[in-house]
Length: 206
Length: 186
Image 1 (cartoon, rainbow over the protein chains, first blue to last red):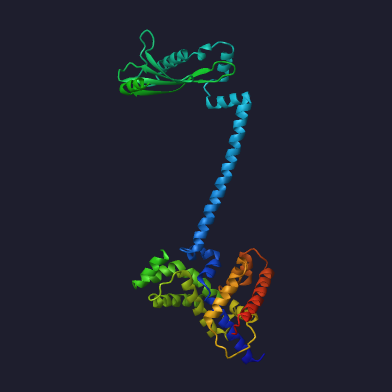
Image 2 (image 1 turned 120 degrees about the horizontal axis):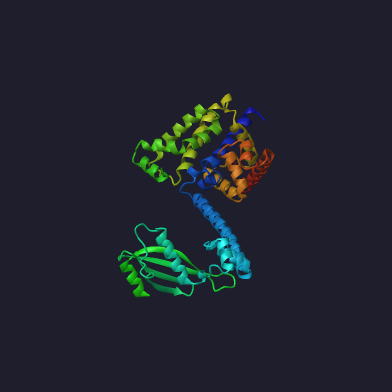
């Protein structure tokens, strides 16, 4: 090839290279070097596409997590329904009020009072006063504690107990949990100091 | 800063437009220019000329995509500068290789006197590229628009250099056939 021909070819190549240089922005953005894509793709459809891709990825992860959680829940529910041992183990986790020794005592008949809600309430109130659980506030005891029971259902009961301060009452919440072959064990799950007007309203609403 | 705000600065003839452009797209323009010229100094000058070009053309232009608008200016300026250096050693980068590779795409001249309408050529190339699988299209543009080295393309897309070379060879051959079929003579 003569030098003239070669120069001619180069000029044509250059023309082609410049024509390629004028191709559409879409094509250029699509092939943008990775290190510049964030800047270059701002406000372009590819950025939206990337966001959609991200959105889709997040949803896929969420769906996967959902499936795993559902499987665990179903396995748990099946085991809970089918196995009494498992059921007891779960209950003991969620209501860890009684120690092994206490359970043994109950098994041996030493603390049958736990089967009686009033006994459980009085035991708690004695402890409330003796351990000074609330500073300067004691449950009123005048030939016995003064209280009003507000049963929610057969396994849940609230008691509004009079305190030594007329404007303050002790709201005690008790629940009965299943225990082997018995009618269940009562236990105090929470208490709260409330004012007299709230207590009256609760009694009235009940 | 968002592109639309930068363009507003150009329209308001605020010199902040240049600094914001440089801040956001300076590296990108330098990347394009350096791939052509392989000289930091020359690339820097081309990038500065790009800002000047943008300053002169906005307004009246209001580019939809500032990045590619600037990229095209940079590329053209850099190719112009390269042309000045073809006899010089400074142009020993990818540009000469790319130019020689593109010989494969030039159809044999059947009617030399035929005028070339660049828009038709560009549209035809776009049509060809859109007909290609995405990865091949990207490789072609990385090589012949961004003038990336084959090694860099292979590295970025996890391919061997020989595979990239082979893809490009086939694409050039197909582009030549496509242009011939379209009756385009360069």
